[in-house]
Length: 93
Image (cartoon, rainbow, N blue to C red; front, side, top):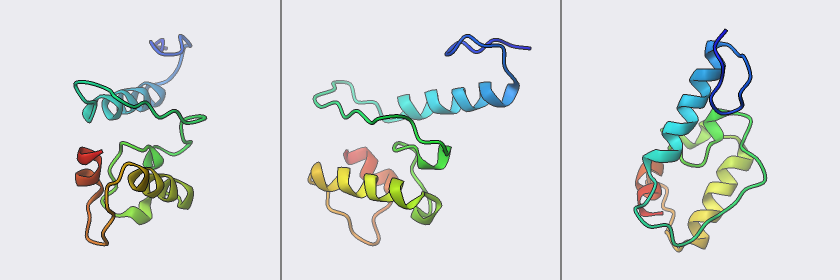
């Protein structure tokens, strides 16, 4: 059984794949210079609810994750329009 580099436990391939996916999401839209840091209580249970995972269809996210995304966009001054794509909004964010 492989060992996870993140948590150090012996685990299965699904756990390692999920970790790789989370690392890719965390680095995809990372700015060169961070000016503001938002902290959340804990990572979401579902990978579809990760903030930086742009949903093709916003209905794929849970209601709480959609609200969180919308409120952070509003707080950042990024207008939400019905035709806005999450990937575009995340790039602006």
